[in-house]
Image (cartoon, rainbow, N blue to C red; front, side):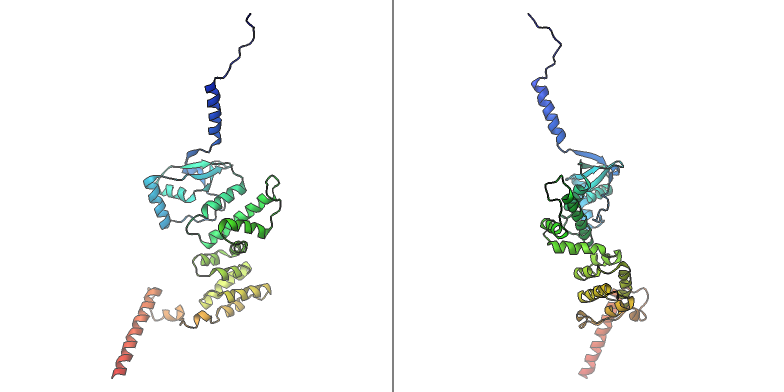
Length: 308
């Protein structure tokens, strides 16, 4: 006798297999073509996107081969996507005239996104001191936040130097050096630009970062007055004067006007002294070339007089 009952629908082996396969595929990250207009820069992105020779090479490569490595982005609450890695590729695609670029969309919290953003950019060949300084600062803060969370396997509390040491293991720097780089973020933009342009050396810059912002602005005036940048010794004294409340513009001008050991073998003629002897259109290089040429003429004249 045949049993009565409701119809029972049984999945075939192929149905079960395809379901499991689709679930596995859903778990995999997919590369998607996303419009450039929907990709927005990472908040407070510390790395500069410059139209330099490196960018030109990237543009030429993308124009020829396309984007070989997809960018990484995360959904933005305001719509579109926030770029985590791939800012330079994004700009290069704009220059090429592309409308979309390949992107992996990944769900990331703020701390994880910050760490990934910094790590992906620290692989670049050339990184400015200011970029490294702000990148280290952002990653260190993200690591501390993760260290304070109870849902992670790491300890709840990570000290400042300990976190810097952990960051240093990833970058090949000591914890102390990481902290010294982060000190540069305390410099006013004008001084930090001078560090990037190698007008102020790294060690003096770290000492100058302890000056108050208003003192740093006055230091610009003192440097212009002396036509010089601080040596390490001068920067250390300025830091001490600042801590003692004695770092006035007059004091800074006095310190900056001192003769440095490196200047003992140099002859310095201030530009305002030279300007009255040259046309306004002359560049410093033209002035230098003219002075050298006149000195060579003077030297030949002296030699002829001695031979008579």
